[in-house]
Amino acid sequence: MVRQELVTRQLAEQLTRGTALRVLDVGCAEGTQALRLARAGHFVTGIDPDPGILAVAHQALAAEPPEVRDRVQLLTGDGHQVGRWFGPRSFDLVLCHGTLMYLPDPDPMLASVARILAPGGLLSLLVRNGDALAMRAGLTGDWRACQEAFDTTRYTNRLGLPARADRLAELSGTLAGFAVPVRHWYGVRVFTDTMPDEAAPVDGRQLGQLLDAEERAGKQDPYRHVAALLHVVCAK
Image (cartoon, rainbow, N blue to C red):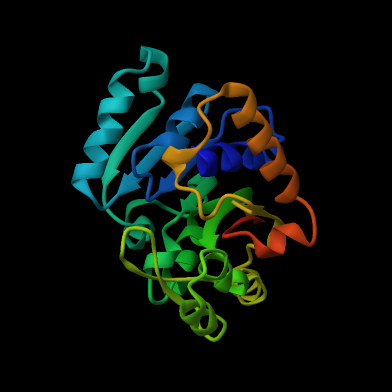
């Protein structure tokens, strides 16, 4: 909940065009962001390689009003296929949230999504922050893992899966090479990385205060530099 709400707020800050956008959500999972954008009037294509998790997205979509359902299509596949499925300049906004961390080499996927992005379009990436990888282990008192994290971009995520992090400077250089330079970036989960989403405050006022504090920290130095995740918005 915390991550999704923060990304929604940050993305809304960057979407200044008043017209409906053609959106591709690569690794859409349960469809949280896809549905939010469709409710806002945008036309969204979501793709995910996991049929099980995509079934959850289909179920959520079925509960939406007809006008929202008509603006969404969900496909089974991964980001490496977008270059074959869609032509150049097909989308005004491409989301790739929580996907690059599972790729040993993200460059081919980044090249593909850059190609299908229309001129003036935005690419929204959510990646693990490689410059602050030691923070979670340090905050939980796992000092051995903390020491190891200083010298690597590899880690094991909350699901127990091997994953990789991105350092902002290196990622920025790669994106510039694909002609989608970084326009703005935010930190996500500055204060709450050790808190599972289900442990977020139930009280609405307290949750609102938490989100407001996270949103503010995610925009400011030095706080955003130590966030668990980086939300990087690029423009073609």
